[in-house]
Image (cartoon, rainbow, N blue to C red):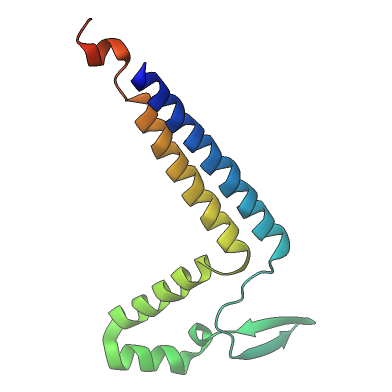
Length: 123
C-alpha cells in the first residue's frame, strides 16, 4: 500500500511539473521578444535593417583568434549561443525542454518503484 501511494505521488509531481513548466514557457513565449544578442549596431541592406554582432566583424574574430587561437573563437561562439538560450523566446523553449525532461525523470522513477508484492517478497 505504501509503494502504491508513493508511485501515485511521483506521477502527481510529474504532472504538476509538466503543467506548471509548460504554462510558464507559453507565458514567456507570448510576452517576450526575440533576443538579438550582443549588438554593436545596425546595418541597412535592401530596405531591411539587420543587427551587427561582434561575431560579424572580421577584426573582432581576427583579434579573438590572434590572442587565443581557434579555441577562443569557438569558445566565444559557444558562449554567445549559451547566452542566447536564456533570453527572449529561446528561454521559453529552454524552459519547456527542461520541464519535459524533469517531468519524465519523475515519471520514470514512479514507474520503476517496486510494487507492493515485489517489496513484500510475495511473488
